[in-house]
Image 1 (tube, rainbow, N blue to C red):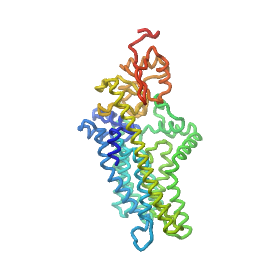
Image 2 (image 1 turned 45 degrees about the vertical axis):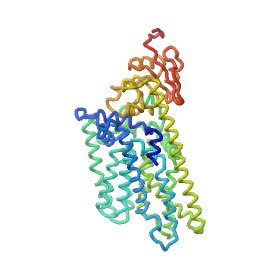
Image 3 (image 1 turned 90 degrees about the vertical axis):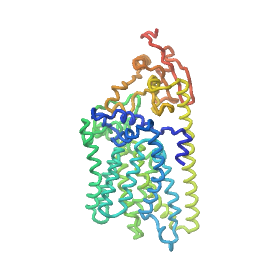
Image 4 (image 1 turned 90 degrees about the horizontal axis):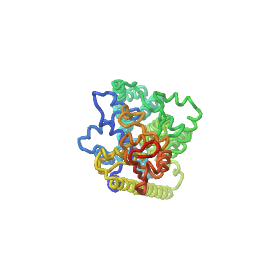
Length: 497
């Protein structure tokens, strides 16, 4: 199903981070240690991109690998539900809605936007989520080696997404505080399993000339607090996240709370399972799975920290836990109803959830298909046949690429690469958009002959400068999603050639 969706949308890239990670992968060199540093992403995905570069199209190659791994992800989610012992489906003597309730939770785990976008997007989020999910499965088994392996897989996830490091810490703390027996051994085993990966990333950063845990997350916190003009990101230098927060703590708290409120539908099941555990404890009822409660508390703490960066991708590794919490909650809500009512209600909800997921996937596919076809149209209009042709085109649309050139992108300015990738600004100097004159001068200096703006523009100020100066910029083409301006040959300050 995901393969069909990807094929229908021409294997479009859904998340543009991969373009900059590919740039880093292409420039990795042991002779330039700094090339291994990235302020926003660990080294895992650039190394994987570099490893599959022999295919000639590493982006498509990893896209296909991730699609092929989607059934494994679904199987692991199902196994997690079984291992958490969320229902009484194994006892045939009991009247249970367990299987039917799982039919609700599975599509929630598979069709959640952070997951369904991560799988075919050739970004590190899916690899990180798959590693963490495997770690969750090992946590459901007792024994020292199971906790070591759980830590190893979560540690592996840290090599693909930095925010998994926070999840690593919250799981460790939850094991130490809430694990049933031998909690210290569980904590030490799990944390010990993560250390080789955390240390490897830290040592790599030291070798590259940066701090053991150095990152550029202050940028994301600034974005949460103040919003972001992606074409002119803030010059934060070596500012630390805590320093940005302390500049205006109340603004930080308010912005973070509002962001969590916006995505509260992910939080409700986690909070709900904690409340249910308390209610059952007080009433003496069948207790909630301790492991599920442990993972839910770890996920809540994780979200409380990562919400500061306001990244939807932070939800991806904990989606299976969110979905797992739905099962006992639904069964508890319907527990006092008749079996017929429960059966009909769960069947109705199941149909609606699956239909909603499939319809959402179809709508998303059609939207992405339209976007990919627009890119093809631009490529043909401007006769883009080589990388040099692509880099003679400037755009404010960070998602734009040229399909026939193995996802080659045009020239952009701004974005996280200017803060997170050493050497990037040396290759691609910032394009100023303060006026038509300065933007024109920078575009000419960088050999740009076409300027493309998305409709509506990502860069309103740059678009206004370009569209209002008909002497230097001539509107030549228009597609359903973009306006294309010809950058006229070099002119002097008075607008003369």
